[in-house]
Image 1: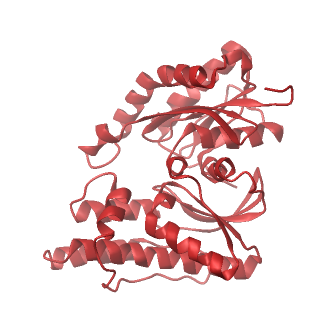
Image 2: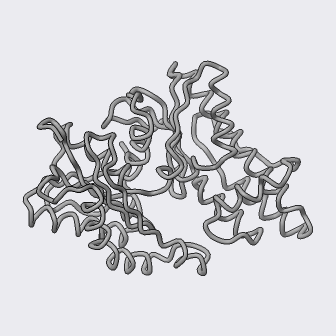
Image 3: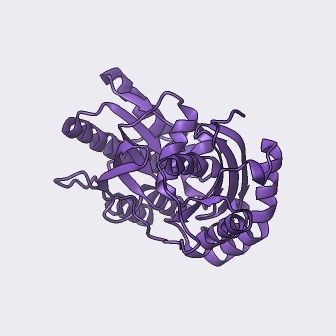
Length: 331
């Protein structure tokens, strides 16, 4: 490491992954340890907040130690401790944030809070060393669906957002109703590969760039209830195709309005194979498309460390009064 290198410790605990990473200069991942709780929550059909918090408490010290060891650094080599402080489950957020604050207090290292959504955007900086703002980002996860104008590394404008369900939430509910269980996104994606998108489903349109996924989710649920013998693979394929068309229509409209022709995907749903393929098709229309590596689409400490680095070099510093904000906005 040279004198100019800045090394941060990214801490992520907003939902059901305890993850700590060591990131150098915002784009080089020295370690990225993820302790997932998927198997624990699977039997409940979704994340149970109290159980998630308890498991974060059990994992956080162990995961941090492993991240430092794998990166071959000590806490003395770290310039800043950068935890997620929202949005997310408040109990889960508090575990990572409290640990980060204690570490900052004990070591004198800078504390720099990170917005979880900003972290998902930053996952693209790790995968694509050439990507620089400004660009458009389609954020798609269990808690958010947004079109974001990334004006700078720490400057954002939300141009469109969901008015009801997030896209990941819709995937999870469709998975539950057809009997696939949790986590819904990957299971719908897998079953859809065996089906044909031959079922017409509704799309909701607004005058602006906002989304709505409650209509299509309800249509799938009603169809399944009225015709239990319906081909589930075809239903999943049709749902996937329709929500992808909604995303593509919105981003094309946004490109028309802004003139920006660089688009990045972010969030857990950006791991969906059909969505990734559809967005790559936009490159035929001279639109540059970026997407994170699959392992960086879901929650991880590396993306938080990358965003934390950009916050740090922009001069952001937080005190020990920094609190978890479950509904934290990007701007």
